[in-house]
Length: 231
Image (cartoon, rainbow, N blue to C red; front, side, top):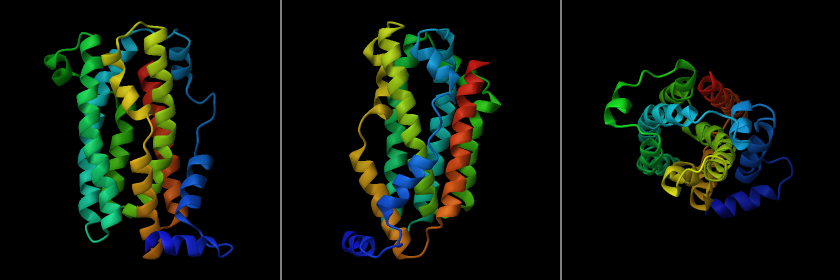
């Protein structure tokens, strides 16, 4: 029924649709080609190998934090099943990503003690801190739009890094699995995002202005993550 309602709305000029909102957010919030110098250096094989160990250590903490945030968003959206389903899928995905990250940690010579004792960089952890803030107080349907736009940029970065790890740095496939996971197609998640935003529109719980604000800040914190790694 939601898909039928959205299709009907699409026939009315000026009426926002889930597809239109998600596509506009991804397009308008996309980072510029020169906004992430570190990924460009990685692509050229010019970044030091130590940056990958730092990335693995920071991501251990980011994934754990984001998984808790997504579970909280799913709980807050308990009365809105399509929205809850989206965040439940994200939380499950974070568990898979954490498993995949182990290959990079092993390739970088990081053991459990190194992971446990790592002191995080503030610039790297700003992103999950903001996700936690959204989880506490933002309308979950708006967060769907913001994180979906950010994932488009993150997935592109991961595809670039995965390719460079193999071709420039000689890392094995197991070390690339984390990046492959985010770089791969996400048709199921995209469908859940559309369903969630359709539901948000139908229940008047989507505010594109706020969703774009959240997305803009997520993109800024994303770039801060990469900049902090480069220090």
